[in-house]
Length: 77
Image 1 (cartoon, rainbow, N blue to C red):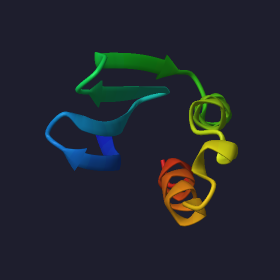
Image 2: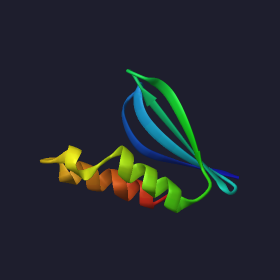
Image 3: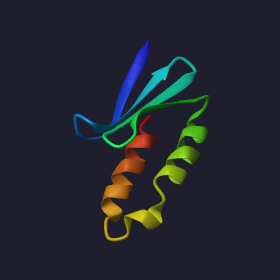
């Protein structure tokens, strides 16, 4: 059974989804700049580590609420 989570979606070309496929966690990031990237994780801690590196809190100065929403979405996976 595949369970799909939407992390964020700004429009048709800027979105991130996570699918839990058995013991694998597959993250798909679609960007209008870079196209589609797929990352596969074996555990939730590995996913969270990637998320903290991908979305450093320092990059969201003045937009802390947006960062907290993104991290909360990752934690719900």
